[in-house]
Structure formats: C-alpha cells, structure tokens
Amino acid sequence: MNNLSTEPTRKILDRLGSPDKKLKIIHIAGTNGKGSTAEFFTNVLISAGKRTGTFTSPLVYSYNDQFKINATCLSDKQIKKYFGQARAVSDGINASEFEIETAGVLYAFYKEGCEWAVIECGMGGLTDATNAVFRKELAVITSVSLEHTDYLGDTVTEICSQKAGIIKNCPVVVNSYQSEEARRYFEKLGTVFADLNLCKGYEINACGNLQPYNAATVIKGAEILGLDGKAVYEGIKNTRPCGRLEKFEVCGRSYILDGAHNPSAFEPLANFLGQRKGKKIIIFGCLSDKDIEGNLGRLKGLADGIIAVACTGPRARSLSETRSVCEKYFADVKTALSVTDALAAADAPTVAVCGSFTLLKEAKEWIEKRL
Image (tube, rainbow, N blue to C red; front, side, top):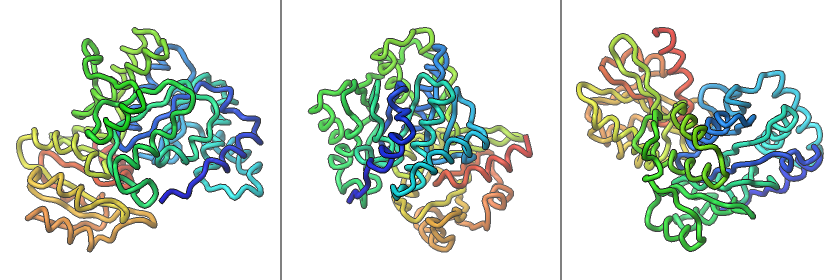
C-alpha cells in the first residue's frame, strides 16, 4: 500500500520561498482523463488572458513537454535553472526526482510570472508530491478505476479515497463518467458532478467518445471559478490533446497514436476502431506493471492483426511475453524489434499505436518524416 509522503516536496517548496502560495492552482487527480482535462483547463485560462503554467506526467513526446507556460514547453535553460535550484535546496531531504521536479516547476511558474498553475497528480492524490501545495482554487477528480493497486488499494473505493485526498479547503468538481462504486463515494462527499448537458452549444475538437465528459468537467470548473464564458468556449474548441487518440493522415493512411495503458483508458480507442471500415492493424507494447490482459481484451476483435513491440525503459515488458499474450486475443500476431519497423510493416488503411506513452515519440518521428 501507499508509503509515499508530501513532506519532502513541502520542505523544498518552503526553502524556495513557498512559490505555490503565490499561484492560483487547479489540482487534478483521477485514473483516466487527467492530461486531457489539464489541457482543456490550460486553454480556457489562456483564452481568458491568464498566464498559466501546466505540469503533467508522464511525458508524451519529450521530457520538456511535461512543463509548459501558456502551452509552450519550458526551455532546457529554464529547466536547468529552476530545477537546479530546487535540487540545491533539497540537500538532506532525501527527495525523489519527481518531488524535486514538482517543487522546481512550481518555482519556475512563479518566477516566470504565472498567475495560474494547472497541476496533474503523478499517482493517487493524498500522498502524491503534487498534493504538498498549500493553496488551491479548485480540485478536480476525473474518472476513477483500478490502477497502481500496490500503492493505492485493491478496490475502487480505496482508490477514490486516495484521489479525494487532493480536496483541501477548496471547491471540487467530479467528472460524471464514473462507475457506480466511485459515484457513490463522491456523492457522500457532497461533490459537484459535471453533467454532459453542460457541453450543449460547445465545439469539441478533441477526439474520443470520453472527451465530452472531460470538457464538461472543465466547463463546470470554469463556472465555479467565474471565468468568462467566451474564453471557456474558445478554450474548449482549441483543445486537441497530444498522444490521446491523436490522428495523422499520411499517403491515404490514418495513423492513430494513443497512450492508453489501462483497460478503461482503451475505451475511446476501442470505440474509434469499432467504427472504422477497412483493414486495421494495431501496434502494441506494454510496461510490466500494466494490465496487459485487460488492455488486449478491450481490443479483441477490433483489428485484423497486431504487431507486438517492446517498450523502452526499466519497466518494459519483454517482447516474447507481449507476443505470448497477444496470441490469446488475436489470430494474426507478428513482432517487430522497434516501433519504426512495425510501422514500416503495417499494411493497412488504419494503423493504431497504443499500450504505452513510451511508444509514441518514435511513432510520431516516423510519421512526421512522411507528412
């Protein structure tokens, strides 16, 4: 179970002069939809003329894209400067890299003149490093399902209690796309649910059948915060989340990049593939701590074949194991030594790369060379 603590991050922030106390913070927890919700909020605030910092994780295409001011990534120079200062004052604290990054990016937002900060939890909520922040204007809970059970609990209710830990002396809005168990938990807390009817009259360009739920959550949150209605409309309209059902058209083929990595997160991709006509190929890789059976089970019957690849990094699942599980759910299974090789071999009008954000950078680089 969870043995994390907000204490190291709080100590670093205090040594940096408590920059979080000088920012208006929107804090987002949940299992799925956190990144998209953060992008919706960011664009709404920018449309309202608010200088806004955004901190999301994990990375999609580059390390720097986790740290943005007004939707522009922090430069290498800025990261070195502000994260270096956070690291320098962390002496004796025994802080993790994520805890240093959390304090460092909040310090960067303050020093670079941000009024608002949109912050996504790294894991859970209650004891996540991001929950060390002192001042919040709004807490947001996106859809909740089983994840990180070694740290957060074995039931949806236990996980909800971790996510709800970000609610500290501030209003809260909850995404209405919840299981009955999660809904009952949050209803007992008296939280505000974002109804889909809030999206009437809005133009939503973010792809995926669950994006209206994320948009509704932001619309309700913006209403609570008293943000200008025109800015809300423009912000919702201008949001197209990276790495989440992101589509590229190249030489008559559709390439879909989706960082979904748990069964619930695969629903938008499954819905999309189910509506596509013609031959479809999936390129799939999965980290060792993810529910590969549940993920592949959600895609069963939705493509003509699958190409297994290995993710990069210390948590990567082996290619042989990935292929073995793929064979349980697909008749036509191939392997490739890289995402690049898989893309070159994928002969179909629709090709989806999914299973982990770690696959997407290589995929996008291959695609962009052919645009």
